[in-house]
Length: 358
Image (cartoon, rainbow, N blue to C red):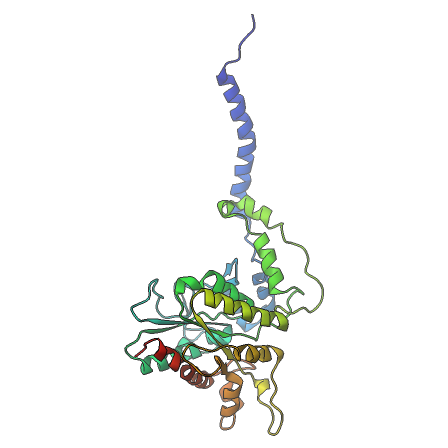
């Protein structure tokens, strides 16, 4: 008589086979979640190396990894006033250098100006209210008291225009900007590992598991093995001048897609202040911004939508010491920020009037 194997026996064998695979995987998953240390992603790890033994290393406590922009300000950070170089208000809960949260919906008639940049926009070594972003908001709000005007400080130290463009592509729509102001040009020429921000972004994206696997520690470790090719040797900058020009065009296209308009600030630095009688000098990134800005025009305005921050600094240098204009080689003082804000506010006045601001 042939013994028939019932379905319950097959189920037991199947269950044992599944368990033999699943249980070890679960054990590995638990070990990775408990013991595996999450490594800082590409670029943020390099920033850690760049700032080693530097007072600015404090900045690493104030940022979190970001899959698009490499890093962003951690939400809701406020430091003691006596800390340096970062102190006081750093970010609101949205990771913006704003005292209040930016509402999801705009108030009736509200005009929003999104200000993107690096540490010069953030207001490095200054209080939040001393940034040019806060200064221009004060001027415009005083000029148009019946119109809500929000100038949003989305500046992040260490950012390049590439990171600003990725912010425009991924986060700007939620802020509903009517105008975007770009202020970059000081971190692009830095070389960290011989690869560009474009290359690092592609590698970082390749290391991101699909959304449905993002919560799995095993998947995260496996995907990190992707995109690990060594960057090319050499001193290739994070963003080359020709790439900078390309990114300006990309920002123009993205801004238009958002239904907003665009302004560029060409920031100045100490090297732009020549000795008496010497010729004014600008670097390749500043030149690209001047050329690009000459092609921009705001609705209702007659002048190019570019603010000559170098020219502003040169005018002030006639009566002020360089130490009163720049806190170091590139970061503007509160006085210089006020002067730049005055020029920007004048450039935006016809635009706001054309939009019914009162």
